[in-house]
Length: 413
Image 1 (tube, one colour):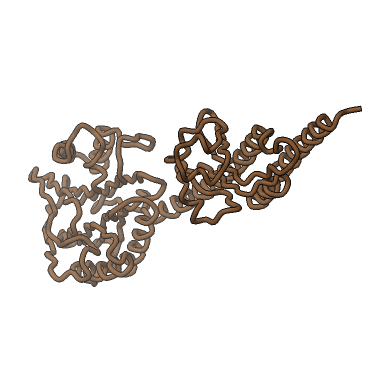
Image 2: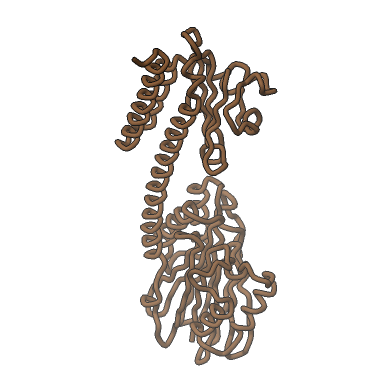
């Protein structure tokens, strides 16, 4: 006949196996984190008669309290995992620890994964009023193993949820990118005739960007065009730019004075961005019957105008401050230039600052000088833009830039 000690050892062995099976089945059944922690708490407090429990777990670069029972939250918050527990790498009784704040407990049980601490379980007020040594003291490694299983399960749930969230964000960004690409006109819709030849290039730094350019054909002789750049990057910049595009399309017409147009656009951006963002803008109108170009440069990189007849390069600088920088723009200088006609004619290169702020060995000044040298040649605007792209190896997948890149070129005969 087995003695009483053997029977107790057998009973507790069966208890451990049943417990591990129960929690493993719960994890496989995808029981929620709250339910899992409730079962864990009941096991420690009711089955093992532990009066105080504090479980700290590492989660996304920070430690947080996962469970506390038998003590109030204010007391639990006094224990700092980095400060008080980081030196503990094995099951330790608190009297051997120098930090007095830990003496509220009896034992610290660390949980490691690949040599990195994942959690610390602190237990106290252990029921020792039983015959012999408390089961808790005899089976601390079992508690450590079970805690490890639960912490890993919770972390896996978090990672799975985060993976789903990231996948959802990717799908939303892809959709946003597709929608934004619809706002950026393609070369196929540009007028290409004996009066105008237009070419462009767009490369967002992220899935969506804050750059924008557009062309509006008012009549066979009249066109309006612009290029703009929102301060900042990403979704918020793209949202503001899409709103700006809608406003510009609604307001831009052959009748409106270009200075008045800029003032009205400024009001829209100032209200919508609440002073948190601004837009640099170059906007122009051209009439082929008079060859007059009217423009406003609102804080944007000055476009280059190259007269291929006279071999003369000019920067288009007349204008005002950026759109949305001030609640109201009172002083706007409208540029007006009569362009030469015929073949070859004039060409205009508009670009955003991503082109001249490439992460290369060149400074902005030397980048501008290189672009100017390329652009100041008697060749079609599309050839000039293509040479700039090749010279700087600008293409999707090249990580050697850190902003959206937009180039918009107009050739006028």
